[in-house]
Length: 340
Ligand code: PEP
Ligand code: MN
Image (cartoon, rainbow, N blue to C red; front, top):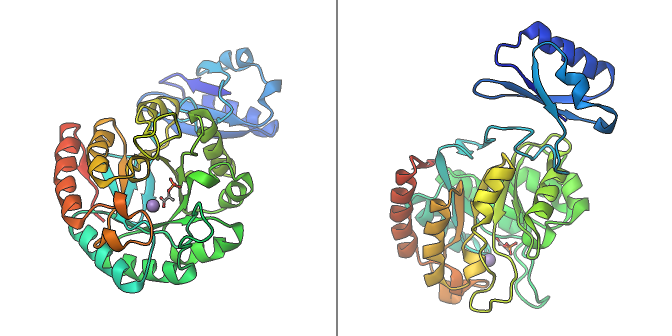
């Protein structure tokens, strides 16, 4: 249920509504818009009638939220929400650029790539330490050792680090080493994992599932938000379709759709859907043009020797050129590139 107050509603009028809600065990989430205050009500709202609230002094409207993802819906929180990670704010006017290798392969390669990408303007570093590989015989990541290297690179180059979690039992490690915990496409509907992550205060990057609808994706985000974690960033990474020319079909239409349905920031990973580095660049540009709050791109200093996703990893020089291009595109939209 949403209660919309009149622009001139007094504190006393709001308090009357609040008192009623508290007395009847409802949680309410005030959200101050440019003119009006909006209260999102959580609880067994089936027993409440919008008509009942409409007659309170100071209330201009009351209605039910149709979506099952209430806390993540735009109706619940009309203004864009912003996720702060150290000096970076995702969801505001500054574009987040997360760059780095697919996997953390060893200390020196991560150090070299991190140094390069941060120098070229990336504001967060990525790299997988626990890798979800289709084959059990493929490189599975360095585990905790990889997290240690990521933390070292993040601290050395002054950029937050983003990496994927796969198991609930690894949460303490991620709390210790990581700034943004990524939930990968394959775990988007791992509800047991989402429920545990919902208890944390850390920022969570929730990738879209390989065959997930936007509604399913937002419902997964709702699991994270349901216990109050508001630090959620969505990441479009392509969906499986009949098209075979690319690894996945990058559904950039999800960017404006998410912006309409939800207040959460959304970034785009053009690397995993496109699968080849020459195809990644145009879609990275397109993501910014479509209104994404950031991009996440795989970059490798020696892609031919990469232990995973070499063909889609950009050479550092390509990343440098891309940064210049997206700065221009962001500028055309009145945005800048965030600085870590
Ligand atoms: C990744 O970003 O490293 C990754 C494995 O991506 P996805 O979960 O989107 O496949
Ligand atoms: Mn990868």
